[in-house]
Structure formats: C-alpha cells, structure tokens
Amino acid sequence: MQTITNFRGNRAILLFWRAFLSKMKLGTIFLVCIMVIASCSEKQPAYKSQRVTKLEVDKSDRELRVYNGPDVIRTFDIGLGFSPQGHKKREGDGKTPHGRYYIDRKNPFSSFHLSLGISYPNASDKRQAWKRGYSPGGDIMIHGLPSNGDIPSSRDWTRGCIAVTNAEIEYLYKVVDVGTPIIIYE
Image (tube, rainbow, N blue to C red; front, side, top):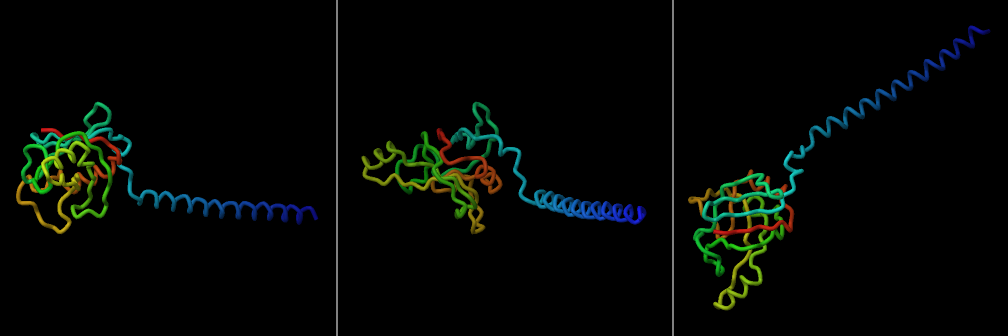
C-alpha cells in the first residue's frame, strides 16, 4: 500500500514540476518575446538625455549651435534666406531675422521634411514693420529640404528660414522642445 501512496505522491510532485516548468517555459518565452519586441522598437538615441537649453544662429558664419547649459553639443552648417544680410524688416524681403526668439511649434507635416517654428515676429518686429507701412511677415522656421524633391540651387535659398539637412532637422526635432530660446545674430 505504501508503494502506491509513494507512487501517487511522486506522481503529484511530477505533475507539479511538469506544470511549473511548462509555465516557466511560457514565462521564459513571454520574456524573450518582450525582449525581442523591445529591441526591434526605435532605439532612444543617446543624445535624447542631453536637454537643449538654447539655440544660437550666427548668420555671418552660417552656423547653428545647439547648447546644453554653457556647452555647445552640436554645430550645423545652415542655409538662410535668399537675401541674408541684415535684419528682416518686411514680408518677402528674403532676410532671416535676428534677435531673441523661441521655438513656438513643431510641424511633422512640413513641406520641408520637418520644421521647428520660430516666434518671429516679436512685438518690436511688428512695431517697426507697421511703422514703415509693411507687414512683418512670419512663418519663419528651422527646416529640412523640400519634400517635393527639389534640390536648392544655392546655399541661401529660403524665404527667410534657416535650412539644415533632413538628418539634422530629425535630430533637432527630437531634442529641441517648444519654448527653447533661439538667438539669431549677424
């Protein structure tokens, strides 16, 4: 009789371990699946942790500098408006404004790959333009290349915006928050 009881006890233990291991297999399979899915998803770039605190545009050097605190973390060559020298005074003048602004919007559906809106015109820009009897213009952006495939024929080809490559605007779009200050000067 004892042999039968031991057999039944052993069978119960065997069934327990069999069920436990099968659940472990499912758990392991589930864990492996999660790991595979996670590794296939878009990786967060290392630079995502570097908060951008300021953008600075030097029009004369055609350079956009990206800051984290006092440190320049990236620098980009840029294109400007088709008449880049001087401050933007009115709509259609082809000039890139200079002054203190901030990034006021992000556009994932831009005609120029992606774009970051600049808060031009500010109150001073509007006052100066209206004083002269002109509209100050607007819709100044940092953007990539035209989405229609046209290749710009010169370095300064925009209507007053700041142009970078598509790869560069993808980087900027990820690391620059709305509200980030941008200083543009000659």
